[in-house]
Amino acid sequence: MADLGTNVLGRALSRFFSFLKADKKDFYAIYAYAIFSGLLALSVPLGIQTIISFVLAGSISTSMVVLICFVVVGVFFTGLLQVKQMQVVEKIEQKIFVRYAFEFTDRLPKINVQKMDSYYLPELVNRFFDTVSLQKGIGKLLIDIPTATIQLLFGLILLSFYHPVFIVFGIALFLVLILILRFTSVKGMETNVLASDFKFSVAGWIEEIARTVKTFKYSKGTQIHLKETDQLTSGYLKARTEHFRILQKQYWSLIVFKVLITAAMLIVGAVLLIDQQLNVGQFVAAELVILTVITAVEKFILNLDKVYDVLTALEKLGKVTGSEIEKDGSVVLPTTNQGVAVRFKDVVFHYGSDNNVLRNLSFDVKPGTHVAVMGESGSGKSTVLRLLTGAFNKFEGAVLVDEVPVGNYELASLRRQTGILLSLQDIFKASLLENITMGNPDVSINEVIHLAAITGLDEFVQAQKEGYDHILDPAGKRLPKKYIQAILLMRALLGRHRLLLLEEPCHYLDRKHIPGILSFLKEDSNATIIITTNDPEIAGCCDEVLLLNEGQLQARGTWEIIKNKIA
Ligand SMILES: Nc1ncnc2c1ncn2[C@@H]1O[C@H](COP(=O)(O)OP(=O)(O)OP(=O)(O)O)[C@@H](O)[C@H]1O
Image (cartoon, rainbow, N blue to C red):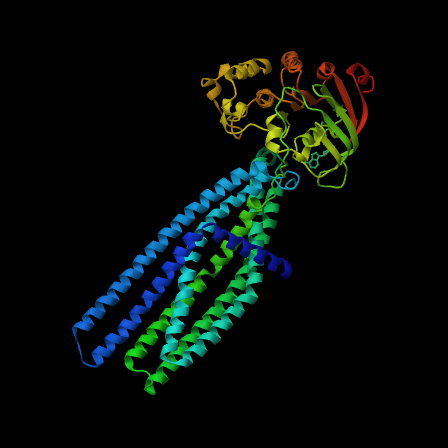
């Protein structure tokens, strides 16, 4: 557990430093402002010391008026520098939001699905809300912590000029403080991350209830949803209490530090005053510096939890921004009118568990051939298509496209020339046309209209007041499944392809549309087409059928041959 904590703290700190690196200039500006305002803040006690000396000497002169002006100007400039600091922090906070919004958006479609298979991505992206914790915490951290550190350092340095004994006290207490923080912070980080894990689990569970709300509504009075929440919140409370215990330990050590430094400095100051090693002016000034030191320590106390929150937020955001993305190859798939050749050579593949889904699967498909992959549910049909998308790179054997391993291709060039329809795809909140074209401005509207007529989507388009501008709302008003399928199929078929991968393309569509779709595919004779299906009408239109059984090739041939092998 301690190892885990050290790892988490180390990782979070390295994330923090690379986060700082991204806005280096802004951070330098904050530190420069902090140093200047720290120095200016000291002008107050020094000015007061000199004023008292003037007063005690009974000499009220022009130089004293000038001095008072200096002190007042010093106070004004300290304020000015603080406002400047706040402006830089505001800029950083805005950048945090924008940067994470774009990083999440850009990264999600590129994520390595094989690595992230065990995550439910909508739940994972809840971590985006930690940008708010990061914004809130970083503001405090960037202004208060550097200012407090600099005030503490300058204060102790200045006190050492009054008498060397202050140095010894200062350094001794400083070291004790660092040691306490050093030995409690690993546990503090560990408990904060654990509390945050529970927080996201609770959010994820509530989200799951919302997703399947009708299941719970009609479930004969089940309490299972409350039981799970109870378990997760108990975990959260336990971790939170444990974390607060660590914080309390750290608060107490800071309070003891504060008491000791106050007592020591006051006693030393008083003794030095009585001994006449300090005059009254110096004594008052020294006490003011001590007050600054105490205020700095207080700032540390109040901001300790923010340090953990910022580091934890970075750790959580890193779950998405640091996730592995798809490996890209360097071979560009040439753009030609020819279909590609596909070959599976002794492919062994499994998802998360060790059960092989494809077991020594070998077959080849000649360029321009239309192939139906058939087999019982779970026989591995869709997996064959998924491997050809280049999204999975961990398997034994070889998956070759034009005799080049699929993993060698630059994914953008491969996917530009591959029409893909998988059951995992869906519509999203945007206009009907955007859902079909995916925002590609090169798509011809005539082709869209032609395909809409073939797939039956034209009925839906004509029934909408806004036609193709109708906004689809997948979360609210449900589209009939046949129209969703038509949109997904059109997406795959639009444009020119060298390879078409279609999973159950006519599922949910009215049967009257199947002949039109099949003759459209027949006309696309140059592309290599691989269709997973158990529909005899579709299989009958393909040049060849591959029959899978438990991840192995059971038989291959024309539909006339294969249909006799299907019970
Ligand atoms: N993402 C995944 N993670 C883990 N196992 C998976 C995943 N996807 C599929 N499987 C498993 O792999 C096996 C083959 O699935 P696949 O979808 O390729 O079969 P299929 O023949 O297309 O089935 P169906 O006709 O029902 O779609 C099944 O046992 C399935 O449970």
